[in-house]
Length: 403
Image (cartoon, rainbow, N blue to C red; front, side, top):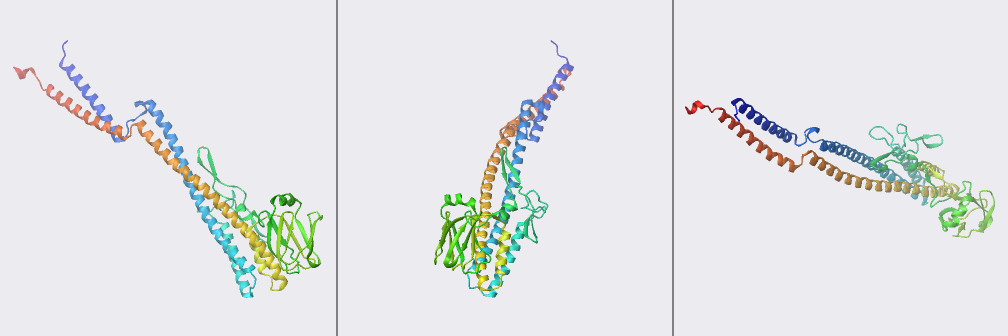
C-alpha cells in the first residue's frame, strides 16, 4: 500500500497531539496533586470520594462538637471551683462563729464577711458567658437565674440541661441548672435534719445528729417530722407528725437521744418546755442557708440569743457542707465527661487521619501515586520531544536531496 505525504503528515500530527494530550493531563494531575480530575476519569472512585468526604465532614463536625463541649465543661468547672472556694470561706467563718467566745467586734467582723461572701456567691451563680447568656439558668439563658426579693433569693431559671453530641450515638450534658447547684440542696446530713426550737430558753445546743441504723430510720422517716418536748429534769417525750407518742426518756449530762435509728447529741441542759424537731432532709437553697447564718449572727448578744445562735450556726454548718458536697459532685461529673470527650477526640482524630488517607488513595493524591505520575511526566515529555524531532527530520526529507 502506498502512503502519501499527506497521510504521513496527518498520522504524525495525530500521534504528536495524542502524546501532548497525555502529557497535559499528567501535568494537570501533578498540578492538582491528584490523579482523579473529573468523575469521568473513574466513576467508581469519584463516587467513593463523595462518600468518604461526607464521612470526613461528619467526623470533623463531631470533633468541633467535642472541642466546644470541652470548652464549656472546663469553663463551668472553673466557676464551680470559684463557688466552692467562696463556700469554703463561708464555712470557715461559720465554724469560727460557732466556736464561742466571740466579742462584739469579732461577731460584727464575721457578719460582714458572710454578707460579702453571700453576695460573691450570688455573682458566681449569675455568671454570663461571652455571649451574655446566663450559664446556670437552664434553658432560660437570657434571664438572670437568681434574684433577691422580699422573701429571699429565688431561682427564675428552669431545670433545662444543655447537651452536645460528641459521637454518632453519644450525647452528653454540658451544663447544670442553677437550681441543682445552688437551690435544691438537702438539709442536714445523710438524710437527717435536726433543729432546736427558736423559743427555747435552756442552754442545750445541738452537737451532733447521726443516723445509726439506716434501715430503722428509713422505715421511721415517713412518719416525721418528729417533735421532742422537754419537761422537768431532762425528761422528754417524742411524738410523730400526727402527734402520736412514739418514745420517752430522760436526758442526762452528756447523753444523747436515741430513737428510730438516729442519735442526737447535746451540750448544756434543756429547760422545761424547750423543743427539738428532727425528720428527713428537706431541700433548701444555699442562699437561704447563708441568710439564716447571717440572721443568727445579727442577733443581739445575750445568753438566750447565744444558745439560739449556736443552734442556728450548727444547722448552717451542716447545710453549707451539703452545698459544698453538691459542688464536688458536679465537678466529679464534669471530670468524667471531660475524660469521655478527650477519649472521643483522640478516636476522632485517628479516624480523621484514616479517612483522609483513604481519600488520598482513592483520588490518587498519595505519595506513591504522585511518584508514579512524576516518572510518567518525564517519560511523556521525552516521548513528545522525540516524536517532534522525528517528524521535523522526516518532513525535511525530499527526493531532490538525492538527485
